[in-house]
Length: 182
Image 1: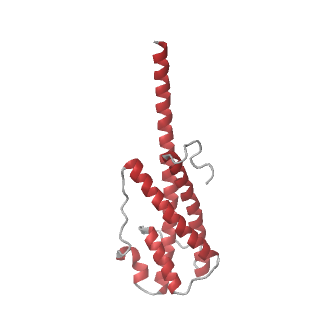
Image 2: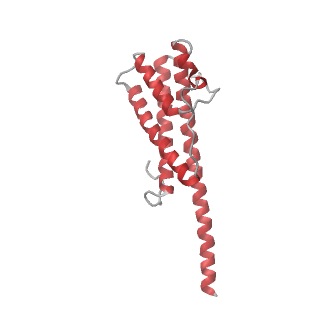
Image 3: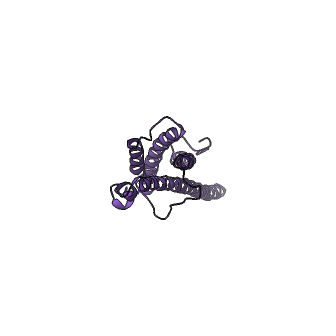
């Protein structure tokens, strides 16, 4: 996360936004690796894509994925489990950081949909183990999509704010020079 918010005061919105964007990019790489490991473990084809529907409430859904995998005996100490744990920790931190930034800078409090909504947990609640594995795959794909979108959005917002500050500084500098010459 080096370089995040370079030139910004520590603790400033700019600095925190840069750090959140860097965390989102890092989390996106972790999620991509986790999906690769899941594909390998479950024997899914690299061409498999289930991105037809959006899944939300990611932290709670991801925790359900982890719980289900543990119940099914997929626990262990391998790379998949280490990456899964890292993703869970970083996802929680990124969501909290993003929520705080939105509330502070935009006055927006993001809604978190109900993770018990049957439309979002169909694969876990209905059918057999194969449907549950496909549902897990969809949750991991949604994590990749969301973290990529978050990184791009946070970077764009930060860039726009920096451009706006630059324009304000230039206008103020011209105004100050004009006042001195009068």
